[in-house]
Amino acid sequence: MRYRWCLYCIVCIITFVVTNVGCNGVFELRIKSFSNELGREASGLCCGGVCGTPCRTKFRACLKHYETNINVNSTCTFGDVVTPVLGENSLTLPANATPIAFHFNFTWPGTFSLIVEAWHEPSSARNSGTTNGSALITRITDQRFCS
Image (cartoon, rainbow, N blue to C red; front, side):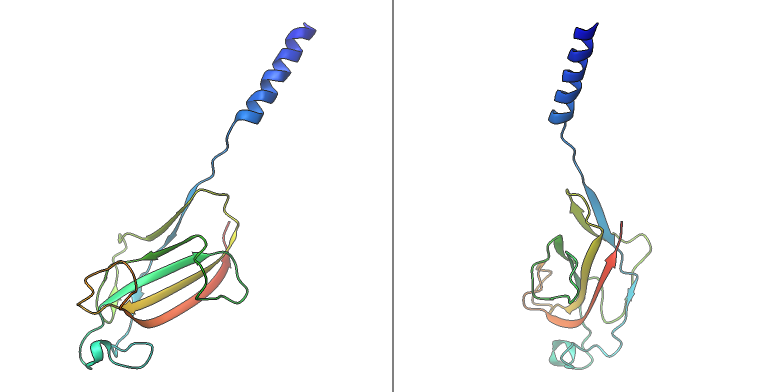
């Protein structure tokens, strides 16, 4: 009887040591609406250099580790996503629009910093998937706790 109990304990210990634990999840960001009624870039210039030309608006979201003072130029630790052009100066996205998703395979730390930027992409850029050649319209930053 004692032999079986020892064998059972050894099997349990080996099972505990060998078992891999996987953590994964998705952080989703939904943009409901955006307003740039004057059609201007962050610099104050009109989009495309000509007033009256609408801004072709796309978004960049950067999810990173918690920073008390968010550095907008440092690496996006948890991911960086650029949307295609979603509309012009002002837009309202439908409730069923696909959210911006950050997939992760680690234990969520609970705190994070988020940078969301709106960009004007000139028609010559053709949805490049980056912000290269685009002009910043606006930027917001925030840090939160989310368990």
